[in-house]
Length: 73
Image 1 (tube, one colour):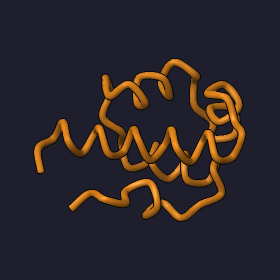
Image 2 (cartoon, rainbow, N blue to C red):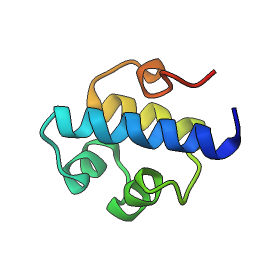
Image 3 (tube, rainbow, N blue to C red):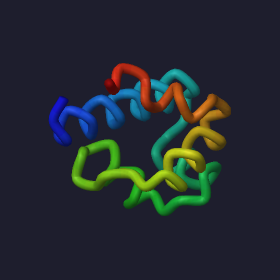
Image 4 (cartoon, rainbow, N blue to C red):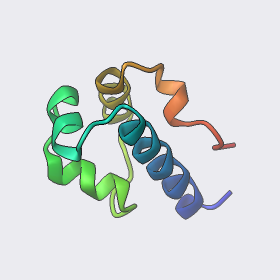
């Protein structure tokens, strides 16, 4: 799997979980302690997430961090 594929899968997982939770980008960013711009960059695959960001997003979505990495092998 290429780096672009990892970013695409991660972005897709974040978007799906955020929408399923009924959250806007701004609401999720607030819950995760991130800036909305950073979340937007992650969801549009223009930024690769750091481990801390993955953990913060997982907490904001109330899911295990592994859920954000599903489909990445």
